[in-house]
Amino acid sequence: MSTADHAVLDEAPTVRAARRVVREFERHLGDPRDAASVIPVDRSVGLDERREFPADAIAAVDELGLQRWYVPEAHGGELRDFLVPMLMIRSIARRDLTVAVAHGVTFLGAVGAWITGGPIARTMAELVLDGGPVSWGLTERGRGSDLSNTATTASIGGHVVLDGEKWPINNATRGRAMTVLARSSDQPGPRSLSLVLVDKRRVDAATLTTLPKVATHGTRGADISGLAMRRAVVDPEMLVGEPGHGLETVLKSLQLTRPLTTPLSVGAADHAIGVALEFAVTSPAVGGPPARRPSTRSTLGTAVADGLLAEAVMVAAAREMHHATHEMALVSSLAKFLVPNTVDLLVREIAPFLGERSQLLGVAGAGGFQKVARDNRVVGIFDGNSMVNLNMIVNEFGTIARPDDPVDASLVVASMRHDAAPDGWLDPGRLRLVTRRGSRLLRALPGLVDLLGPRESARPARRIASELDRVVDLAAGAPRAAMPSARSFELAERIALCFGASCAIAVELGGPDAAGAASEARLRAMLDRIAVRLGVLDAASASASASLLGDLALEATRDGRRLSVLEGWEAAP
Image (cartoon, rainbow, N blue to C red; front, side):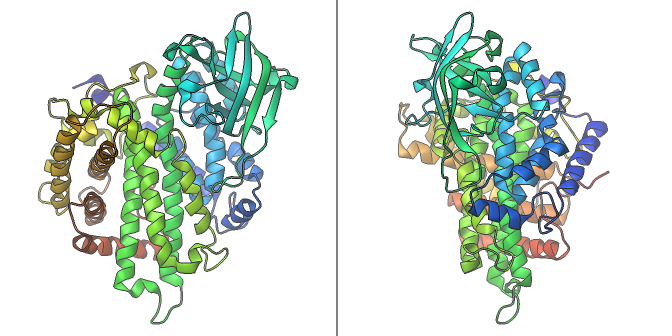
């Protein structure tokens, strides 16, 4: 058993503390239907329509101290278990994804300092704990996702002198600081880029110019703008890591920031599903509320299954950051592709059920749906868009297909247990730019299927495991090319869906009600849905499990509950 596997299972104190933190945070946010709550839906929709920044909500979240969970314990913060800030970000995103995006970007801007360590980590921690928003200055106008083509320069000597523009950047104008990727050498190759922390309070304001806010389709109120630096002089101790190591630090940072974007989509899914369920239960219609129609239960159940899958991948990715840190190069891309993609699908398929209500404001409580539909599209672009993440998966075909010893599936489930927590923040030294053996969750799929035993969910699980074998064989023979083929991208997408199946099984088997009927209903519907998306099961055959899940979701809605793969986790003592 590896050190990572042994690091799993200290029980109660940190788990109980985490539950309390998440519960209290949710309680303080309040009911979004209440105009007096921290983030009421009606106010969020109004701000979005006017493209106004949600300053009051951000200030309130600062007061609640979420930023403390962006800073590891070793640097004076509260970050021990990644799942905790992820669940709090999800709670915000469920109410207003714009607020979650605007606040959560600070972790993205700061994480490079946690990875490199040293004095800059202390400086960054002081800034973040003081409530200073930190943006992440990677992209530039006209250069897309190609960070190696960065044009901003950093002349490193007695001081660091920055020249160039970063655009479009979240919180570029409102942020106190920006972690800037800049070219520090004219020599070709990966060692030509460095990271520099630009604290606006420590730089001559005359050398900094903010660029105008960009009008975006989603998260309209967010500060998506830019920063121009004209011979901006920065103290050398503001370098994040060693000179020339900027690109490597960014690539390792992405392995942590990509999973941290998944709660944005999961929160969006919560909101969208909540609108649809509320409409189904309460809307007057000929013959009674839509919930009475069999087709409604199947439609809703399919959407709920997608939402549960996104949640399971989020939870699994949070756990893998601690327990399979060395595999995050692949795991982060699998999660970052699959979760926003799944939630986009969920939203598209709910919209016809809501009809015109999916596009209108303030109608039947559905005013926020059209905002959610637009906002989640933005999440797919953060930290590498879908094509970038699929490309990362393609680059791992060789390691995914490499023969290896079977994974002990019971150890994987143990690391996902609801009553277990990691014994501390991860070791950044274990991050790798390329994995050696792919993902243990993928390799564990056959063993996870065996753990299901005679459960009905084992039937779609076996189909998915067989499909993974087939796809991995094809991936092993896929040609290696600088520009992967459409076929390689398709194989990568199918691998991501199989990864989702492993996440769903492992998280459900590690849950507090793993042996119960509700857990089996959730898992069967999730796996049937994945099998349909893979084309190894027809939609009609999946309708029964979707309808059952729809019934459970409607019942939960009437009781004021929400279905979750974390059923019982937050409420447990």
